[in-house]
Image (cartoon, rainbow, N blue to C red):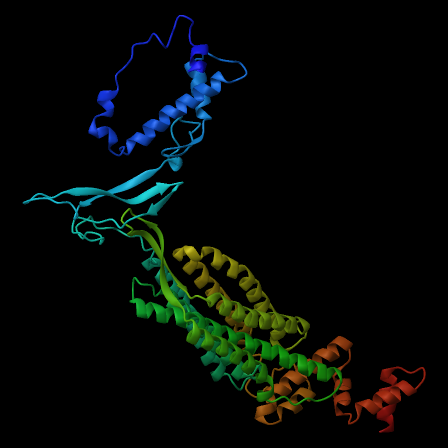
Length: 519
């Protein structure tokens, strides 16, 4: 009161103002009723204007009188905890920030406790949901006209965007799968038909067939990606999710373990040739790495399928006010699937990286049709594609269309690179007539090579590799074929080396000539 009297005009007296009788208002029964929903907002609006006026009056300028613009500018910066929630004013519009407001969803339901007579029905208000601090809080279940919380069946039908794969995209993925299957089958038939030719024997038909089989399995992994809930039921979609990692992983393991085995064999023979020692490698010896790698993948996949199998799950993007999904997308997932996926990536990408290193070491060997170089190029490109493709597929996982296109495209490019780089040079060489079934005509090999080809059939392909690598060593050392033949026929190369070392002032070539003269 003293504050108001001090700031009001001198000729204005509060004591002289007429008294207003509030008895009639206070005695009214409606005065004691609970305030309606709008009452807290009206109360806070008046308080906000009052606080803004007080801030102006108490400012250093001592503005007893102020303009409407000054009051509005001060009102914009007014914040306090009011009856309707935390009061925050939008600076751009001057209205209440809706995120700071307090809203309630009122449910009008029948009052079972009310005492009514005859056919009369009494209703009551129940707050079902409350909006506070930007979020809705459920207080009581919302009761519909049928007395239940179930969504009424007569509300308008909802059109949900399920993000199923389009027909055109599925056709494109199936086409890529078919192309790889045709290539794999064609190259497999070609390999068996030309199994006696030198080119095929040098690469070993069993490994070429394994490569085609692995590429075919990887291509078949595109098919489960197309099986969403738009074309199959939940059980079929779950089976498709489980089959995808099996087909892709086993196919990848077969293909690259075969390539790794080929580079491992070449490296082993090369090291033996450098020591002028003949090495006998059986198919069982060179297939051990392949068996180990395949067994590791099968064990991980089996445990994954038994413990935490993949399932087709529907993710909801947006919902309508009744909680019905407006947009969804399907994804294959499991609780601990990422752990098994990481283990599989470590096993296969690690072996691929090691295989690339092996292929790099023999990339310059002048083997027939430069197969070592082709293997190195294929595995290097696939390794690069894997490191680039994995992050992209993870990023695009929430977009089913992009995810399918990227993943199926990566599989298609990977299989194409392997098959074309490995088989096309061999097919071209056979068509040009550079090789025949016996390997004795039109073949750029020496008499030593032909002598190896007379060995047993099970050892012929190993001997071919041995002959080619020995020739590569000769070319690198710039020695002639006659000298290589003499070196290979020496029974004790170690004694020859010791004799050459003991002859002071003579070269290795002179030492060998003296040894041949003595013989």
